[in-house]
Amino acid sequence: MFGQSNVLAQGEVNFPPSVEDFYLPSIAPWGAHNNYWFTKITFMVWLAVGILILFFLLTYRKPQLVPTKKQWLAESIYGFVRNNIAVDMIGHQGVRFAPYFTTLFCFVLLTNFFAIVPFFQISPNSHIAFPAFLAAISYVLFNWVGIKKHGFGGYFKRALIPPAPWYILPLLIPIEAFSTFLVRPFSLAVRLFANMFAGHMLLLVFTLGGFAMLNANALLAPISVLSWVMTVALTFLEFLVIVLQAYVFTVLTASYVQGALAEEH
Amino acid sequence: MYFLAAEGGETTHNPILPLWQEIVVGGIAFIILCFVLMKFVFPRMEQTFQARVDAIEGGIKRAEAAQAEANQLLEQYRAQLAEARTDAAKIRDDARADAEGIRQDILAKAREEADRVIQAGKDQLAAERATIVRELRAEVGTIAVDLASKIVGESLADEARRKGTVDRFLDSLESTGAR
Image (cartoon, rainbow over all chains, first blue to last red; front, side, top):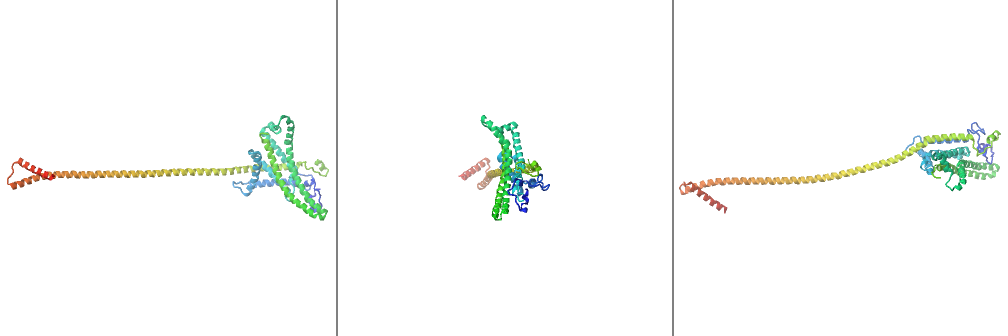
């Protein structure tokens, strides 16, 4: 059932891939199927956190006015999120959100990126727990910021009551409430999760499909090769999706914060 | 749902339901990441950006200040130079005026001195001439009387007559001399 790792050794392929392929056996305790504390997925999350902390702390240990190459790299990541997302979306006061947005962007980007790194080949974000947690933070963030700025009543009045004729309001208020307070966090989490899930599934289909065809009939070998070529092509597509989804997640969070801070509706 | 299934031995996962263990692990990991990066890294980046802005703006400001100072110094030097030129011209003019004055003074003094010398000479000459005339007159009288007495051989005893004779003679002499 969890045979993805020893597919080649056994020479048998469980094709088509299933949801169970996303739930790998536990590392500690080794091989347990319903223990999720220390799996490849959580290991990758810790790894991503470790890499990011090390990278930023090391490159920014001694910041200089004239940056070194590494310092420049770290600064351009932060500068990109700060200027092109936080300031562009929210305006000047967006600078104070830039540290969180950058952390979010880097974390999503790196955890997404595991999807195409050899030997990792799966993103932690294909488990909805992680996107859901990030979406929950974004949800709390934009609501908290809005309440802090406009007060509890003022914020909900702004969020729920659009400038429309009174007779249409009974229709609009439930829609606004639904879209703002229910759909937003859900769509944020599901968008990222589904993209990474589908990406991994696609790669699995074409990789395992190649083996499946080869095992079924040696004459299908050219089609197996075509299938693996597709895997390579889809890996490039996956890279695009990885960067795009990290960007979209950050931009949407920034957009929600901007909406909560906006003076008018 | 999957907990129940797990107890049955056959694990079936629903991908849309999060595993709470993963939420805990992911949450802790992400919060640690946020804490470290947002506390130790990005604020320092903002500081560095600010320092860079300050450095550039400060550099521009310093350059502007230096430029202004240089301009001011240049103006000052120019003013001093112009002043010095005016002073020099004034000194030259003064010197020229002084020289002219001194020349005039010396000339006037020399002229005065010359006049004085000439006047003194003239006076002396006149005095000597008067003296000579007076002596000559007495001498000529005596000589003439002596000569006449020798020639005539008689002594002219009458003083008054003699004096009149001599004076008449001299007057005639003078009138001939003046003619």
